[in-house]
Image (cartoon, rainbow, N blue to C red; front, side):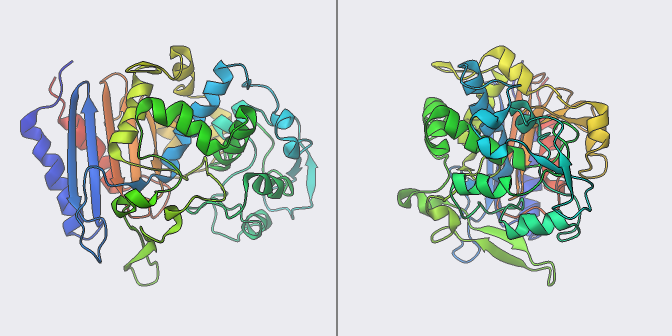
Length: 398
């Protein structure tokens, strides 16, 4: 297997630069890797006000690209026998024992029935725990309003409370669906972070740093950016829906990620760089191995990157139109199940709501990472995502 066709790599720069020129993003880092071949493109700026240029080591909020890392951390503990996939989480999360479930999605939050069974670790990893994002306009249903009041609505900002307080708040609300019945986005990864910390006897931040980041040399990945590195953190932007103008969502220096969070979010709290995330991606493509050791076993990675959902579960789980036509869900990440675009069957990875995406293709030995700092406008892949995936495949040299 060879690398990339050099004469085709320029198309990546041209296409990504066009996004900046049109004002769709302020700046970005794009990375494609295959074997020893790594190609990186940096265009635009980290901050519109200062004009500081984007760099290969710019630090981004990777949002839901955190989820595969959280899943990997849980599977480390499974391999060590400290967690079991099909054991109820009640042993370590007694707050979630004896769950109640909404009678219907539109029911008032006290109109419930008993849960048919406990929540398991597998439920958290596959987003079948019965709680998560409701794909409707905010405030449409009573449960959405209750989630918002409790500070539990899925969103781009970490919770403002400790993990123990967060899980206590969650326990005060009913489940939306019966455990195992359907796929509900996001919250399973948040619960996972609390579970991993309790199983490991350490904070979630410490466990990830010691068991994943340090071995893989992911020196710029964590839940906040220390002062010595803060000038490398890109300002995050979003579109004002009323005016259509680009506005600041979160600054670099002085912003939310310039200090340790109260809640280390397994669903979307990490910051990272393109090269750091490449280290994690290469480990996954190598079936758990890295230079110097092993994070996970081959069977574990195979399990994580296998579609875990049944057709009936997908049918009961709206996300965005066409999502399930070519996509399944493994542990904390999507899995390509049919070749709809360029991604081949068996490709895996996920996107981040702050404008990031990463995919790995075992068949081609390919990793594609795109980091921008503009919040997504919906759950469906942005045009820039599908463009970078296409550009990566068209550059293959065999």
